[in-house]
Image 1 (tube, one colour):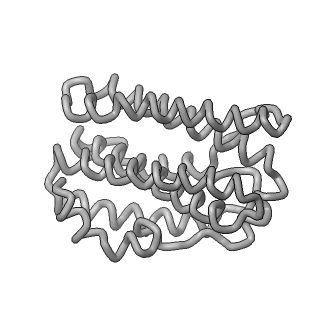
Image 2: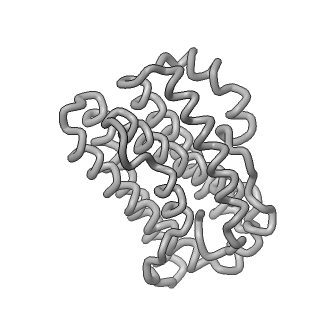
Image 3: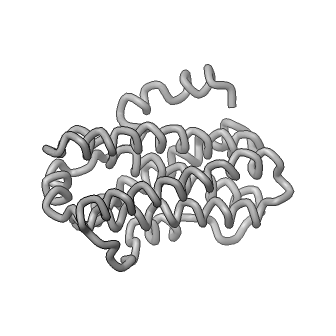
Length: 209
C-alpha cells in the first residue's frame, strides 16, 4: 500500500487511535499500575505470542514472498520486545508469572472466517493481527500517558510507536494480495465487532487486552 494512500484512507481513524471504535476505560491504567507484575507478565507473553504468530504465518504462506520478507524481521523484533519486558521484570525484582488465557484474542478468533475461500481466510488472519496490534498500541499509549512512573511511561511510549508500525504492516500485506476496497470493507466490520467485544470484557489491570 502506498504510504500516501494509507495516510489518506486512515487519517481520521489514526486520530482516534488507529480507528478503534471504543477507547480503553480510563480506570484500566490505574488498575494496571496496581498490578505491575501482572501487567508486565501479560505483556511479555503478548510479545512472545506475536513472535510465534508471525512464524506461523510465514509457515502457512511461504509462497507469499512479500509476507515472508516483511514478517521475518518482525519475529526478531517481537522476541526482542519479550526480552526487554523480562529485563524490566528482573530489574524490579519481579518474576515472570504464568501465562493466562487471552479472552480478548479468543473472542477475535471467533469472528475469523473458517470456511469459504483461501483469500478470505488469509484476509481475516491479517486483519486479526492488525487489530491486536492496534489495540496493543492504544493500551501502550494509555500506559505512557497515565503511569506515575516516568521510566515506565517512556518504556511504553517506545512500545506504542512500534505497535503502530506493525498495525499498518498487516494492512499493507493484506492489500498486497487482495483488492484494497475489499480490505477496507472487511476492516470496518472488524472494527465494529471488536468494539462489541470490548464491551463484554471486564476491566482488569492484570492484562494488556
